[in-house]
Length: 608
Image 1 (cartoon, rainbow, N blue to C red):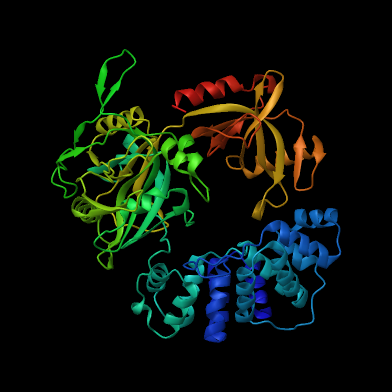
Image 2 (image 1 turned 90 degrees about the vertical axis):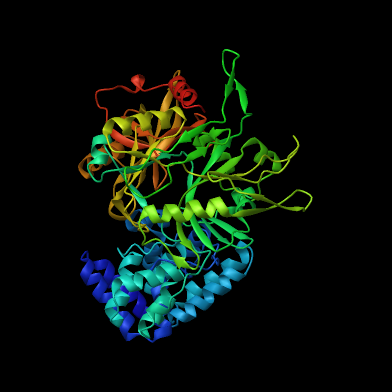
């Protein structure tokens, strides 16, 4: 592990990617294959391969307490060291005295990690962590803690580890990348590369593949400048989710590659029983189920069950120009879905109060092969056929297994629920439209917002699915909901290159004479602005809490955001979704900041 740590230090010392790759390739080539395989996982910032469900379950507070105990430093001294170094691993390397062992191989550290993961309770874990950190050198402890916290901070992402494997063992980078994507294990990928067997890698389900990302478009004209005959979908205000389906087993993963199945226990059953293993891409949204006839504001009946024609694709192959039937209901704002997130157990009452739907818009794997390299128009045909012909298995409340044929556009459990039962779960093929002019695209945008959705996704029908990349094949068009003028109430030191500056700002809105916090943002200002503001905040600190400072509430910011949610996290009772700083407002006094009443007005307008 000493050689690993020394290599990591050398990699951290250079900003040149080629030099980082060369240093890592040299280390991997010189180490025994088993040690190199484990080290590749560690260099990716993980204790275990991505596909594994094993986690250490050792929090930062526990690590802090152990480092404090072993170092003999006070909490104040440790806080000062943290402000200097920026992460707990670097602090451990600076303050720990070091043990008697002179060398611990990566494979030995991995075995200890597995012991730590296997025991239950913080006390038992603390014993093993304390023993480990007391035996290794300070340099080794530095990187062991960094691995445990999941952040090496040496400027080495997994993509560079893949490049280093290719360089070390003579393979092509794209072959290494593909094998790692299929396996979800950079260590196993290294073993195959060393043996010249990368082509033998096969898809391992239930580890998430990177999501294809979209780039923002400034306007309809900007969006259509990249490709013609654009395919257009609504941009839903939910959470992106990848569904891995194999027989009766279905699991969902978020864009951060965390499993979220527990938060939506009704969804797996609605996708169980597909005739082939598949990986789907889509959006989970809170869904309002309405009766076929819903009274409008003036008391008239309004038919909600409508049919919309997908326009012909002007000679471009793709979704058939047939009638797609929209099931009664609509997507709700993210604030509704938020109640379902992060829960270990979801009650039937909550499932009734906040029903969800899964809107599917892509397929990555089907019929035993990856289809990501195929054009979107081909993947769309596969997806349409999959949802049109499949049969759903759905476990009823009494354990009765029933089957129902899927609608070409909508798939739902279609069971006879009484009022006390759960609502049906919908698996919806996201409707696709076509636009070849800015006027048509703007009309589709207005229609999407009228349906309560964020905006549009605009896609090139010839594009492959490129995991983890943000190119111009997928674009997103949306307009900011609003901006707020807010007052900074607290600041924190940043991370990485912002270790020494106060770059994370907590801000508030006015409620009479009070300031009530509503959010936190760290992006939007230039390095020069942050440096200038750091000096101001240091001179105007009310309370120095170490890493965090409360400051005189005199600085006004303009912040943009996507949504407003109800939240107990902030004193205002609200939180901004994806807040970002638009600009400093030195022209405004704190008394001119926006109020909680304006926040409430925006919340109501978005349909909160």
